[in-house]
Image (cartoon, rainbow, N blue to C red; front, side):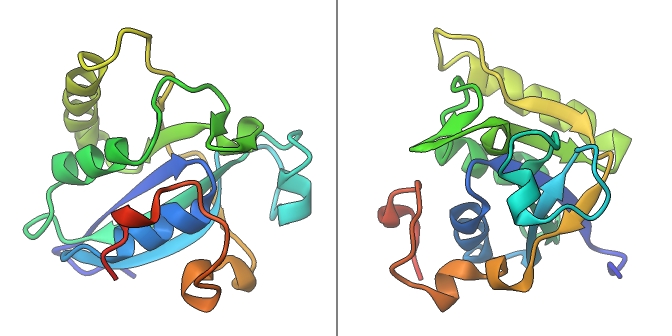
Length: 166
């Protein structure tokens, strides 16, 4: 349950372990949860998602306080850790489950998403392939994926470790 001064956004940026770890470090982030978004199977498992046949993207649900970290700032930080021109791949991870996306639950967020997306597009000669869609569904990933890099500090991550303050 979210408090009145909280919002949520769902960000897909390749392997969800590092994306979650990165966002947890910022003031204004209330909670994070890794899972699978915008696919076609009910309650998918990691193994099913890895088949590249379920349509899901590895995604992080971020609950945040917009007074402490506004959505445009969250999105700018998101663009710092992804290659927005890479289709279905981030780092060494390949497959549609590793696509990039911004999935929203509040339609009023779309104008901020569009504006930030356009600002980022101007930095790239190639067309960005980051999805911008309403959230259709989200299923939490298995418990061992939650806060994975806290549990496994030397675990794999496509995001350079220099992005992690903690």
